[in-house]
Length: 270
Image (tube, rainbow, N blue to C red; front, side, top):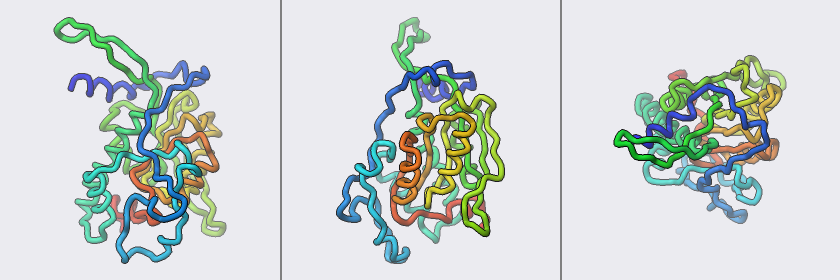
């Protein structure tokens, strides 16, 4: 338990990173990839009931060949499936919805922290013994895409109490329907940091693409961005990776129908 708490707290320091721009790359820990079947819709990890829109069956399935290792999914288990089911269930009360969403967010955040660079270290135990362990490199930050991305901020702070979090507000233009940036505020040295970009639902991917462009304008390299999401459509994930091949996407599920009601249910505005 001592070791576990030690590892979780290490990414939370706000000191600058000295090796991010030095060209050294740390190997990413591997998570279960999206199923690689290009011939049938069986590559989708979950099946929705007949009450979902019929056009879901016509969506192009995800393939590892087309998306590559940049798309990572949490290892699927019954706990995650239950949380996904409760969040999708229209009869779920708001209290249960928020509770289960927070649990799922915490799982995604924990795995997102597991993708950050680390180095080996030696510590001394209370009994005087030397312990060979690891510590995360300092200099990470979170960025939430408002408003639904703000639902993930507390989950990140629960793991990293002192981590700095920036915000981006992006909305669709009423006339052109294109994503437009209305507000953006980041730590001054965001270009030196690894960025955990938070947005729970990837539908078309347009909002995230615009957010990444803003981060790039502030000096952040796409390979230093880890996108944390709960649900993604094949189209959304593919659009983002095609635009930014070096970005990492971490999610729990890729399915043609995403629970786009998430933000409204979570904040009680439905």
